[in-house]
Amino acid sequence: MKQTGATEVVSALHRIYDGSAWDDADIAAQKDAVAAAGLTWQVVESIPVHNDIKIAGPARARYIGWYKDTIRALGRQGITTLCYNFMPVVDWTRTDLTYRMPSGGYALRFDAVDFAAYDLFVLRRPRVTQDYTNAQIAAAETRFRQWTEADVTRIERILIAGLPATERKFDRTGFQNALLEYEGVSADDLRANLTYFLNEIVPVAQESGIQLCIHPDDPPFSLYGLPRVVSTAADIRAIFASPDCQANGLTFCTGSFGVRADNDLVAMVREFAPRIHFVHLRNVTSEPDGSFHEADHLGGSTDMPAVVIALMQEQERRKAEGRADWHLPMRPDHGHLLADDIGKARINPGYSLIGRLKGMAELRGVMHGAAAMHKMLST
Image 1 (cartoon, rainbow, N blue to C red):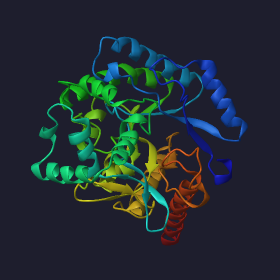
Image 2 (image 1 turned 180 degrees about the vertical axis):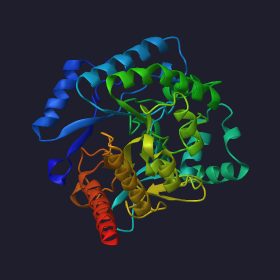
Image 3 (image 1 turned 90 degrees about the horizontal axis):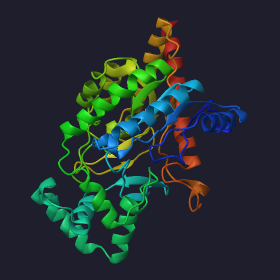
């Protein structure tokens, strides 16, 4: 990481994902390991939010208490930024982890027809047809009839047997049971539970000198009939209102927000800029049926240079105000699988080195080019 030109590391205590509190000594050990490489650990991604918090379960108070304890411990160790998400059951979700690109590399892909085929004809959850149109059901059935048993096993493994962004692993019955925990939980209910959670933890974050920044849903629409409430500009406005303070902020993920055509990313940056505390820069190519794949960082459906320039303008505004947090931490997210990373056994999908190096180089080129152009026009 040091060789890439990075100065800071986004990290977490990934082995602790059951909702229990993080210990000061463990946080300090991780921070020291980062420092030994000449880097700084300032951003945590993530502290998992326990399911009882999301559904207002009987142990909610205990898990929120542990979450507060972890925030205080992070503050004592000088950590400044905490990225988290509030997605029910599943984190970021794709149907294909090795989608072949014209370049010969591989990308992550969400195929809406594949997903519907699995949901409707393999998982067969209760009342599933209510979530699809007749045309979607027909397309999904056609796709399902083309699948072999190997195809079903492959897509089930990707979707539930080893969820790519979590430590949770399910068989089909276990996954169905996890979904049943959300029976009767509406989008309004989930939003109310998020508001309750924020009203509990934001004051602790303020006292601890930590900026909270919620990550948007990925993809930014309902999956498996589950509500998702961090998908649009309207969702972010509602989150920022409860409570309305600087510590209650946003991770601006261009890939997550960029899937939806109704999200104007540049306008969202300008509206929410003062409370953007962390940035994920990646691009997607969206399709009319809801499918998408991870594009080159400067390709895809999002005008990445326009977003980057808007974020750089926010940095300059903060510097002029004298804000200590003027520097926006960023990471180039979800790179393609390229070159001799292809075939390596221990690479997490989306997080290969070479693909993200390529993305970082492209993004840094935009940043340096924009800064040089601004200097030229100012003289």
